[in-house]
Image (cartoon, rainbow, N blue to C red; front, side, top):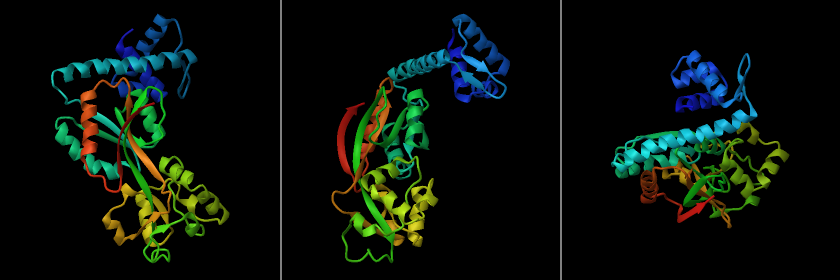
Length: 312
């Protein structure tokens, strides 16, 4: 059994296709197929059921591939630990961030991190929480920036800050004048523009204001039309007068006052907590500490700083 053979079976499990797996491993398909067949014979089990269009992972194959993923991750860790023990921090850091955080935090975070670790290249991926969770577990990313709650086995979290939600309205909206804060009763007849399914921020807004979906469905409003939209898309729709929306405060800037009006939500104001997440087995603790400090060093307006570490 070799690391290459483990790499091949993990690739086939991911791609569900032998040719595609061979391409990701930069070997010929016959080389990959022979190696996997040799491993199956050595173990005395069938890992994959070969089908015409794809492959099916057998039950025992799933268990073995899970262990193989961990072994490959640990083999990478050995090299990284050896390099960092010699003061070499130049191995790339792969971070993931959810869509409603990345565009607003990273422009400040990356320059700050470069000051702490100037030789560490950063690979960035924006995605949904459930996708980042999977990639964190498999080692495809090293650190995730997301909102709590985030409960995954073998994952640690570090809470960074808490941010309130804000209401945004077209500039000529009648609510704009004379009200410092707005209650849910004030917007029950409005068209509410929300992110599409899969965005955790949408779920947090609906949890804070459970009547929003009910009101939209009852009044046959346009909310479902915008599923899959980004905050940037909704931002300009609100500016055009298409409806109103609820945003995390870090996504709003002084420039937005020229597009629409920003209002506080009535007490108790809904908030979300933003955190770092990483595997408990992640070996590059020096880089991780640099990354944490890089976030703590930057000014993030409208947030409440939280220095707290919790293990999940």
